[in-house]
Image 1 (cartoon, rainbow, N blue to C red):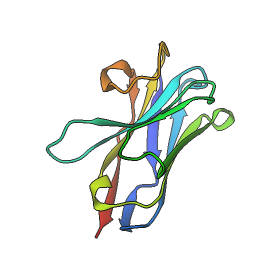
Image 2 (tube, rainbow, N blue to C red):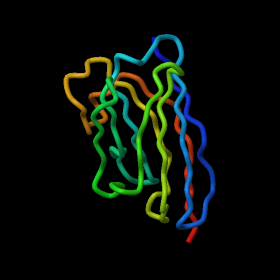
Image 3 (tube, rainbow, N blue to C red):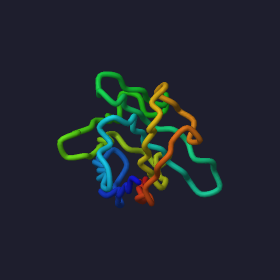
Image 4 (cartoon, rainbow, N blue to C red):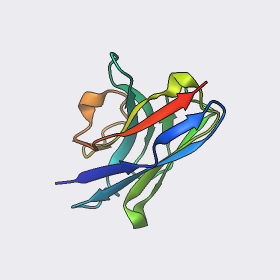
Length: 125
């Protein structure tokens, strides 16, 4: 079983930056594809970014391309999301997720096996 714990969320002004971290425990996630999702109130959970288990391939939602960067440190069993040029539309709870099947770098939440509890990101205008 894999436990994922996100951290690094908070309140930031528009144009600012935050770096989210996701620490995994229970099992190494180095062979898993990892993803970040977000969910705003009243909306469905949406894909933000994903990274292949070998870390050579990444994928981003169009809304965050050029602003967000996903990375991983398998030695630390962790995944990160660097978020720059934040705007109020980025306000949401951000979730880390792991896909143990790694058939593809999926954008669908249903393809991910393990989830963290989420961390709140609020961007003020």
